[in-house]
Image 1: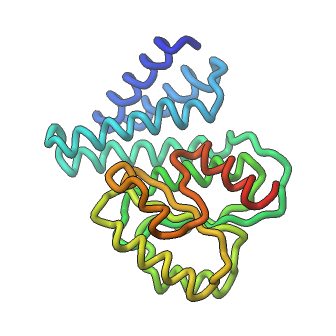
Image 2: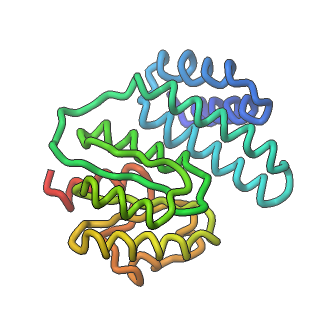
Length: 217
């Protein structure tokens, strides 16, 4: 598929999102995407993720309301759940990654997408979802310590919650590798160095490649 055709698919998917047309959104991704040979990774990154960035921009600029943003995002959440069964998976590498959004962070599409990419690469994933308080994250780490913790933050005003999550994780598992990522880092370049985390995954692909290097798989 050419870049122009991919752009057209993204535009049509975005229109279906804004209309809240779940059936059409799924049809586009499957019939005009997967069945026409577009790799699932490309559908995630170039269609769903880019459409979500546009939804976020429109909300921030008051072009759409909070309700419309929720409507559109719900379509992407459904799309990722629907595409989950189509994920191509490498053989298990024996490593467990825990993925969590920080406290207050309700935007989980990016974290869910990262979880899918990790699974495709052979990792076993514990996806905690949105809005996980630091103390509950610490409790989960006490019950099952993974090989890597990945923390996601989308909105910049949740960056203090990221700090608390990192601190809570280190109290429980001081030697646990920690990855951070999410749209909020566009407003806080270099924060990962200040937090002294293992690495910053700028997108799902980079998260996977850095996780593989860090864990030696």
